[in-house]
Amino acid sequence: MATDADEAPLLADEPLRPGSCSRELELREFRDRYVFRSLDGGGAFAVARADGSLHPLSPGHAQEAAAGSDCKVSKIYGVAGMIRLLAGSYVLVITSRKDAGSYGASTVYHANSMKFLCCNEAIKHLTSEEKRDEAYFMSLLRIAETTCGLYYSYDRDLTLNLQRASKLAAGRVHKPLWKQADPRFVWNRNLLEELIETKLDEFITPLIQGSFQTEQFTLKDRLVRITLFSRRCNRRLGTRMWRRGANLEGATANFVETEQLVEYEGLTSSFIQVRGSIPLLWEQIVDLSYKPRPSIIEHEEMTKVVERHFHDLSQRYGDTMVIDLTDKQGDEGNLSNAFAAEMQNFPDIRYVHFDFHHICGGGNFDNLQVLYDEIEEAIQKQGYFLMNSKGEILLDQSGVVRSNCIDCLDRTNVTQSFLARKSLDSQLQRMGALSSAESISQSDIINDKFKKCKCGLSMVMS
Image (cartoon, rainbow, N blue to C red):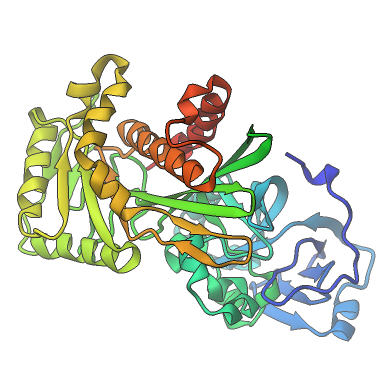
């Protein structure tokens, strides 16, 4: 993959395409202001260092605001947002990036490093207690600067999977990226409000947290490219154990949509799976024990919470099949039994329990075939999305598999990978890259590339 140093320089007068945002910006840091100037779109704005007020600049005013030699000049690769604290505002900018691959015809970048620019001169007027609070809040911003797994594109909305994007009106691509985006998957959504209010559309860079991996190999002397893109939902964020289950609106912790794209001979397919914490009201209080005990929160809205969660899934993905990978014994068993009992209230949603540790213990992951044999007919009925080089839709995915364990990590990763490999075989057979009797598992080289691509899932942490 290319880094910034490998990229060809952009022409300063190259116009932005409709719906794109600025790829490179010049940042000038004066004592009283920051000036941001697009190197490819021509727009500019200033931020006052005293109070963080935003000022869009016309071309003439941009030259005037950027005049002077008493400033530090640097190049940045995007504005990720702005937040107001007690003493003023802080602007988050992308200071380095890496070419992570492509999604369709658009380059996807990984935000390698970010930093907050301070506009907090009012800190000198704060009380001692307010200064302590501000220092604490700033320490949280430093943590946000180091957030891993952030991806973005300058000219394509990455929040929508291929099937959803293909069904929307063609004119939407001319809207600013933030208007095109599904807000569930915009990591910096709450940081964009002031930029949106000031109509700085060409500077607004939506970021997606998750994983982006791409691999390619040859079949029948033709190139096959596999792309894995996992998008983490922002509705119930939090770290593992500290954030569990669902909220009253039905949004669950560690909800991730994973899309597997396959490209071969002008055909492109997309296979979607989702994961998320068990959609009950439950918690796992962190204590000194190695594995804190999960506990269910008794609440009169419990069934409504489950209903809201699956209604949302059905609206977005169609028929939903639930695969619960938790243990059937112990504390996990209590939670699993409660989940199974709630699912009895929803006969239209298929619920399958598979005790992963019991059946696949000792690394016997091939035993997942037992699960697949049970759900194969439903998986094939849900299918996958397929389109040709003209953009014509040949097949639709009519439903989704929702997998969970306790953390939605290891057991879920292995299970989703197994199902994805089965789907990949079907897709390549349909495309003509494999015969009906062939599988990628028959080639060690191809199978290893597939596993390497799937390793990126482990980066999507709760």
